[in-house]
Image (cartoon, rainbow, N blue to C red; front, side, top):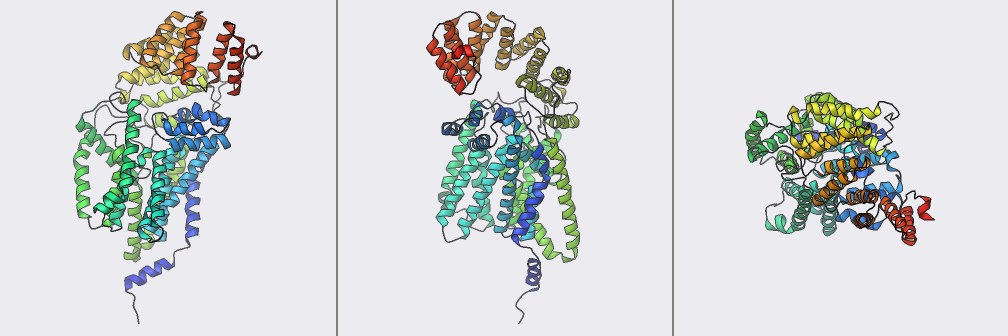
Length: 630
């Protein structure tokens, strides 16, 4: 007796042709790894990498010894305006075991980013399988996630470790949650596992706070009674509370660091303009999912909101409502749209944080909704359109090849700072930002003696490169050539620093003075001008700037240290001792501070204290003058 329907026969014939899971996993990992292979030979880029890694004192201590107090510091403090303790912890592990000299060890950081991305890609495959997708369709969806060009920023940029790390635990939490729903055994264990992975994801990046919303969407897809108090409130209460807690912590840090609020943005908009730009960003992310037409490290807020943004403000909500209404019985389409929307809603910059309008990295998890839709559509087409299977597979293959080729080439863009910012300049030759960042990179190389293998710092013209790019940046000044006060002031400060390398101190001071006139509370300009005054031995003028700086920020240890040097040269030993003591109180792990205080003790004929500080500086890894040790 025949008990199968034609549809069942068709489905079974396809399933029987599917390979073993382990073969698909190996193929998926191999293909994903191959397109990101260029990142393994990449260096660090002068775009947050120095702040997070190369000049991060909290991390550099791990190159000498493991410190649990240092680990605790990650969980009780922010990192450059972000609360990412787990991400910082992974950097510390790499520093301690593999990269005592971080500058010469970029490989391990890039390798771990790639491996974490591979792990996340495999999690996507298993997630789709648990959601009822066949092997080949799940493989296709996960492969598109793994090799999509919009993944490059998250994988190739060491600073964006937080993306691949939060994404990995985000998906592990979803997988554990599905096991909690579907399995009768060990339900409490899977629930706890899901919750722990959620917490780890939030510790890696605050964007993970959207996960409880994704759980609700998953409940709808799995046909649970999601809107009952038992499931929506009681079951998810820990998730809601944790999400709110991490959100509040992040908002507090961003506000305290003036990353959000009126001081944190370059261009100010009214509420309608903010909503319009948010709708525009939402639409751009959807377009880039299909066709990633532009991938830059930085997308500036426009000075004038384009007309297309206002059109998006009208059309995007209408389209979302229509799709939701028409597909309310189609849980696949509803899941795809809701999953994407929930994971980008908080990064649409309606409440602006910083100067970045769009960012490829914001779509790292959000696109999973659309990849799931593609996987289900592919599976449906294989079953319902047997006559077109060959054509569909050819089309999908070509699409994957296009993505792989684009991702491979885009990975090379992040090879080093010069390649990254030259790519930006080539795409936006009339925008100041690429020239500004290129100049800042060359300035950092000169200022901090960065051993970049891609540069020839012995070139006699090397010292003039910052000025060359800054002159161009100043000529183009600001977004779309329209000057913005803060941007102009930043350019002047950087121009002043560049002039110092060619010993044009009068020009440097003039640049800093102009910047201060434009932004009276610009601490960086005050600090730079004070240091230049100190260098040319105009100590009284330097002290005026340091005193003014102290009124703006009384917690900067480096400022107190520089101030103590100035006071020492003015023979104000008591004041110098007071300020270097303040610097050490604020930051007790800087060897140079102890050497300076040891000098003060020597001048005051206090040999025991002099020796004690000299030994402390030596313990911190500094080369201490012999006269302070004897």
